[in-house]
Length: 213
Ligand code: AP5
Ligand code: ZN
Image (tube, rainbow, N blue to C red; front, side):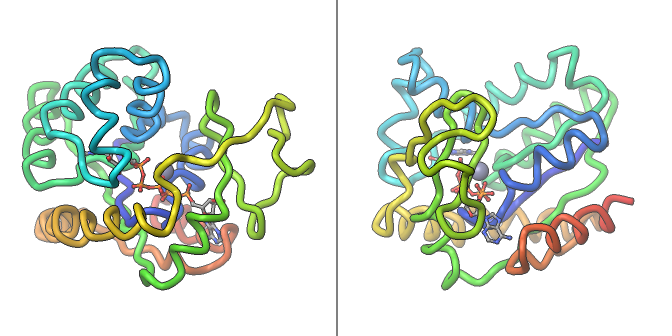
């Protein structure tokens, strides 16, 4: 399967991706996770991306298209993939079409994680992540067994630098102006399914599974 998960910050893309990935043996390609790893290790890519990410703006299409093109060549991605947070502009969606055409494939399904803006601040400000695995928790909705500690490795959890109310406003603005047109782009291609992302995590999982079965 070749899938796209699209939705605003905090809509649950990163929470549902690992579940779907394991179920269908796909690779999980999150441009946000890949960019954060590049920023943390101060690679040339990370240095170029940091400023935009810190203020909640999108990085350039060129940067993200490059990392996705490279990632899709990995052997583990040949069975299929989930694109989490990509494409986020119509230009990225067009580039993706070209990349897939070149490989003789296409997108099977695009899931739109539909949710009201008003619930996102609580989700974003309560999120804690385990940086090396990308696992995420929430102080209220998905607490770790021990506060501040990853369940599996016992390593410390951190908060993302862009997970505060002020930067969230910019991320939401970027979503509405630049990413919403991408939803229309896929609706016109008749590959779009809407997911009610406001429900509890397990209910969202069932809806996602139904959409993919
Ligand atoms: P990215 O990392 O993609 O951030 P985002 O789109 O803002 O999305 P989030 O990761 O915040 O949301 P999510 O839907 O994954 O939420 P999660 O499941 O973790 O991008 C970061 C930055 O990188 C961008 O701002 C940009 O600068 C750059 N970038 C990335 N891709 C780019 C691209 N293609 N082009 C240009 N720039 C790009 O859930 C959030 C919290 O809620 C968690 O704590 C979770 O436990 C909790 N939760 C999840 N589901 C539920 C539920 N159903 N009920 C209650 N709580 C829930
Ligand atoms: Zn995410």
